[in-house]
Image (tube, rainbow, N blue to C red; front, side):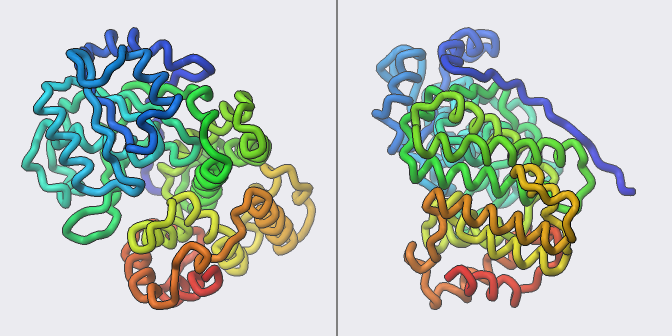
Length: 385
């Protein structure tokens, strides 16, 4: 057995009204001039107004500053412009506020704020100096990516026009605030898509063959929470219990995928960069086909996933356990309106060559439950097209 390491260091403050504790934690971290990193769709929402009220509106006063230009799938300029604003205003910390895109951009901006000439393509360079980054407080307003507890950032680079996974423990937040009150305004479609992202994280991390039993247990409990809470949050956005459980489950999915992920994410990443699909939606549309593919090559793979979903599959043959689990999850996604085809979201057959090329270069499929070829990736796209 090869050496591995287990680490779950992020401090998390959870519960309705947790946002109101933010000023005290900024003081403890020595942050006096934070930069809030978010996206334009959030500015003006009730969630953002709640943040502004806690910090002391308006933005860009003497105490805090706003970068609200992050794209739905963050690009290199989002990171560079946020970092430039940090330097210009002498900001000493970052509050990343929103979905996975602002959280990822806020994480990475701290490195370029400190080292403005650092080439983003070298984020894979283990010899690079990551020390001394400004403190990060991550506050998600969606329950999906779990980026708030992750040590990675996914950014589309200018040079390649592809998503790059930037990874280093120094990217971790000093504090995560999970306040379900901030997610009650999330529309049903986004609630479903982000929830499906969290579900995919849990399933793919559990079935990833890397040895990490701690992550396996977290992933399975995350699945159980999502199956119970996501339909309630989808039907009634004001259900704080469901919203809270989804926030926790999303964070659990991200903790679990330090094991790594699988083929669904390799399929989904190019769908965002090439065709503009929301990442959670792309995962949802590819998940069932990918599970069928994996189960056919490794029978029994999804038995414990089925148990986590509440199914009675402990004492049935492997193939039946997989079939029942996959059928349950297909119906579950359909109940959330996530049973469309890719073509309904603008994906065309002429996109296939570019999609397959990027999916093949994406590292996630290398830790899939079963081996994947480029031809397999093409066939999987065709099955959901």
